[in-house]
Length: 124
Image (cartoon, rainbow, N blue to C red; front, top):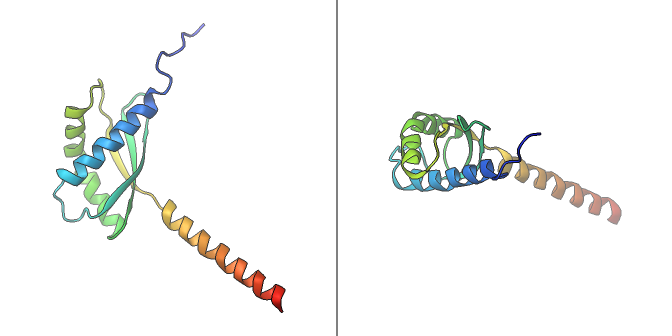
């Protein structure tokens, strides 16, 4: 019988801590002008903590250029995480643009148009 892990949500806690630390590192220590107003949406860590997908969104700027800049700075950011985190393996970082906020805005616009159209049809 397999022994139950004493820390069942450790991966989620580590991902959350990585997100908090990366937010601070990007805001305070990353000086790349291609990285503008970045918001980290979430972090997914593999079970062996070797890799982490970091999802981000932007207020202003080009997502492709920003992803490229963040991925080029991944080694620098990983080194900063190594100094802050107290885990054996600090994951390799992979930055991905998160399109969820844009998709949500598009869906809200579609729903609003459908409601307005239905209201117009019911009046006439």
